[in-house]
Length: 90
Image 1 (spheres, one colour):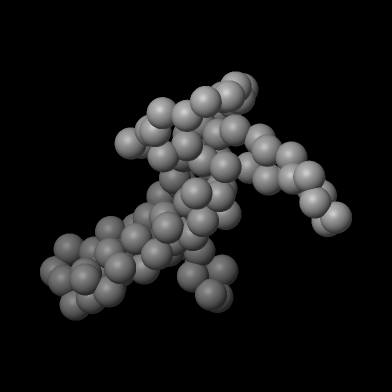
Image 2: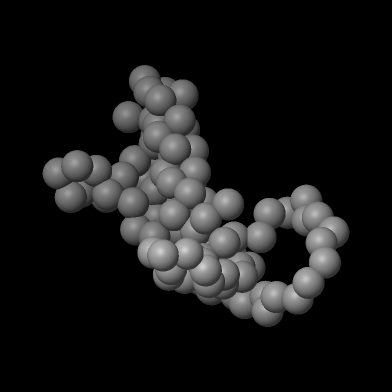
């Protein structure tokens, strides 16, 4: 999974929580979200080349070869389209 896909998965979960909470009696504001990822960097050997960030998935899988595992913390501050803080359940 790419880092962008992992962040998009968090976004989709928040949107689903908002949908499920519509009209509830106790809505929540969504505060800052801190996510820590373990990842590897890969370099493509193609005409386009480039480096991609791949998030390690929890299941893990055996493989041959070597890679350096790195960690990064991403802080997200969810907002509504108008820039106001996001909420769940309004």
